[in-house]
Length: 124
Image (cartoon, rainbow, N blue to C red; front, top):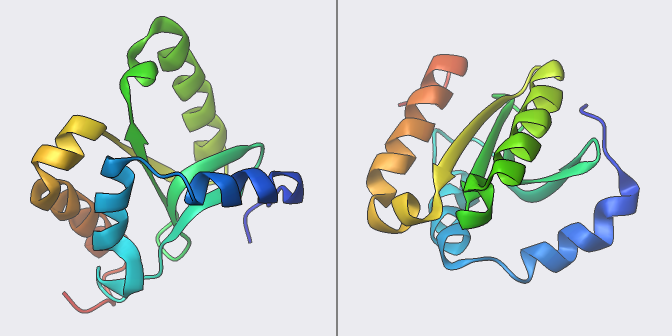
């Protein structure tokens, strides 16, 4: 089990209740085990972070990035965060919110491809 920060439980709940349009759209394609029967969680606390989406069986984190992620500060924060998550053996896939809204099928295809590669025993 990955490190869980119980102090982030309420913040995680608040974020689940205030998702962006891109997050809502992507969640509609990840929930209910739609990709290879794999369970995804939304707004999961890991270490001192709350990741957008997490699939424990493939060690996958999926992030939806808004414009704040493309500032110098945002890029540096994401680099530090990704490195910390990678130290836990997690793979982080990042998608721009506009990409999710305009190309949801392509985004889901990338996630599906990664999951097939990491869980070859899953049905395709």
